[in-house]
Length: 386
Image (cartoon, rainbow, N blue to C red; front, side):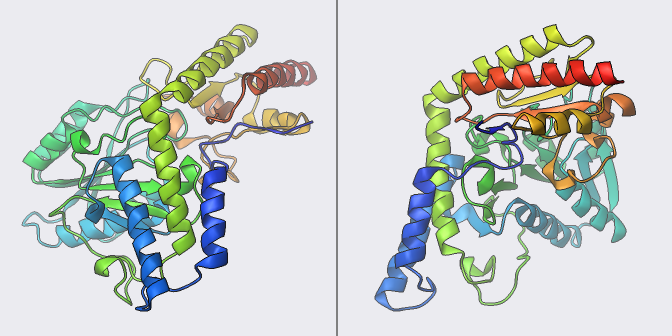
């Protein structure tokens, strides 16, 4: 029986077009793109084409795109740049603010700044997962602040309301970083409207390869390179360029932009999401969809099954050939309840009984029916055993 994969928020399968482009480079263009001979220069040109593809996805100038090893490095570069900015502030110590539903990478970097003397501020969210804008405004009243927000939540799919946030932060002489890792292919990367100083991407979240990402840097924003050495990326990120992966990310960016522009794929995902959630809510007593009252992407369903721990359901689904998760892959080996769900006011018990079912453009109606049947079977069986 073919395995059903419903953990696209953790990583996505490599698109065939991406794989083909990367294999061609790996087999035929092994040169160092920083070299001066003709074939190396041709490869350097191809890298710039990939940079332009990523820029088109985000609606920015190609000069704003800096390739990194992934989303975590992109986030780290934004935080290091903010630390450089904080040294010049008259206020002591500077502030860093993030919501209570951020990705572990963002929380870790914020903790590092706090250890270096920064004031760390947590902005709460409502029960729906929506950001408490009033609390953010109160934080900005206390002085300039580096604010980091996740555009689409990796566990619930809730879309952060960013309208006017950039103006408010910049009027307070602060900086804004957006973790947009979960955005490409799901909603438009509205970079111009969002007005972020830094924006992070990871290719493997939109059918590109692992180990490659990008930070988009607004013109004039403070910048400090995380990697030092040979001066690649115009001195913004040292190290021999990961050529095949960069080119693969460019192709993946074009595919993601096409999905959002055409809209058909996302409409189909929305219909599958509605079918999945309505069937599970109807078939499981007390079941709840987290974030359902807020704007969400159609790819993500956060399902609480009261009284049955998620790891038990996932183990049962494994036997049926269904792959899903209980939350962020970056903390998948932990048994502690999700901090994101706790921040939304869920109890520890409910947070421990929550599945994340995340589909992709290649998910089929038949697979969704198998998942519905599998989750219902797992729930009934485990309840009977308990």
